[in-house]
Length: 422
Image (tube, rainbow, N blue to C red; front, top):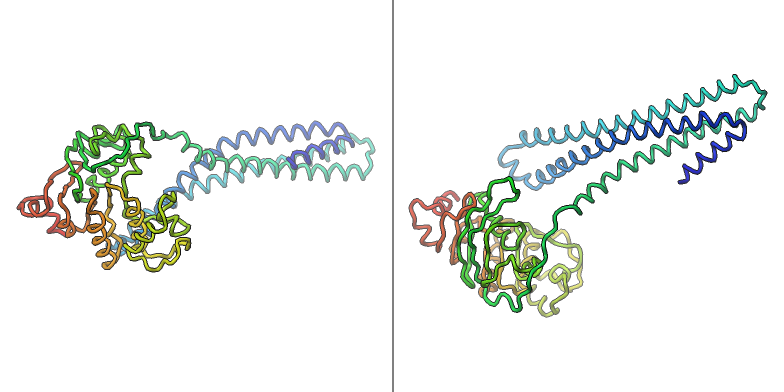
């Protein structure tokens, strides 16, 4: 607004010397507006491309850093470097093209400034009206100031318009399909924690093949179930259906209640999920274990002692983000313990823990979740002997199911082959 007012003031000042100068000043302003309108269409499109190509680049860097040990062990550095260069080249080309387009617009504006200044000088010479030298100097200096002011004004306007692409991308998320949170809340549910899958199919996109295909199985109350299978077989997809992360076909019954009839928030509050990658929030130990402040200090201290987190002495103590992966996993375990839900899901919580923490977590699971139905994705297959039921998943289908000892006795069984390879 200050630049707009300044530009108008300069034009009025020039007009007081000679009203004729209003014509070139207005023409100059209109010409730049047209140039700006022409530039914005291209500039905005290029800015969108720049943002779209930057996200994969950053994601690739993060994924590479997370898997650096695996990459070096497998000696895949050259392949990863080439793939990174492809992402970087694509982003750099879009970014460079946007900057060139921006510079081209500035060049057009600067050229118009010079033309306006030359036109003013020619106009003074042509009029020959014996205008005082001081007024000539005033007009020329003010024209120079006007061109600089308008140059900065249009640069700010175009940059603002380009940067609003960021807001546009954020607003796109508001147009995404929202979860349906309608449903009937069932009192004192679940009394028992039996689970039954009936004709369950899952695909992440409508035009995509099914990830899970015709799942039909029953998990009894308080049963401990291990889900095993190769990478990409559908293990995580299977447990994601229990908390309705995705829409699926078929029915899943918990305590004889179809989970599709329940509000999604209510359903998820009744199931504890401990992920493979532990999530810690900035804040106090209390806010991490009991973010909704539903439980007493005694309840929280009890679970802290259970998992042997002896480094904490005050519930209002700030979490040190330098905790080891094992310690973070134990804090996540505390969240599940304090809630006392009857259904607990583990997504290979031992994957990133050291041997001592791994043994502690396994002991806590066996002792403290004895009255719960436990569903666990297992990668280290020697742990399956502690479970009552094993589901072997491959390509979204239950290939084998039964107790671990009987499945391991099958000569051509898939579980036995997986066990041997590990």
